[in-house]
Image (tube, rainbow, N blue to C red):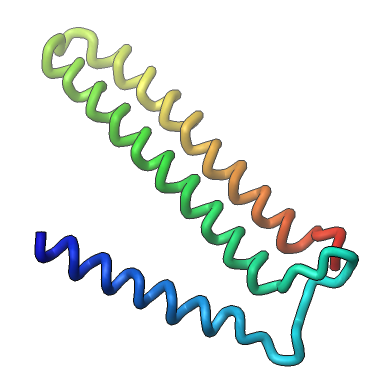
Amino acid sequence: MKKVTMGSILSLLLVLGMSTMALAAEGGATTGGEFSMPLAVLCIACGVGVGLAALGCGVGMGHGINGACSGIARNPEASGKITVTMIIGMALIESLTIYALVIALILLYANPLM
């Protein structure tokens, strides 16, 4: 319990420290347009979006590998089919993270508000 509390406090301090530096844009740098969203907020949102996508895909890959390993342990003769299916599934899961990265890059570099 003590490690969880200390980890939460440290992560909270890290988030607060990074957000003050990111939002301290000199001269009020914004993306322009009618919405006038600060560019730092857009950068943080893209980073959080890709991070959450990678976290979710990592958890999904872990569950997939766990299932494949237990399937091979129960039936070693089927290891070839299980491995091929697992690799195809991992590629499809990884494509979701790549889609999130592409969307984040579009938001950062092809932003119509700039």
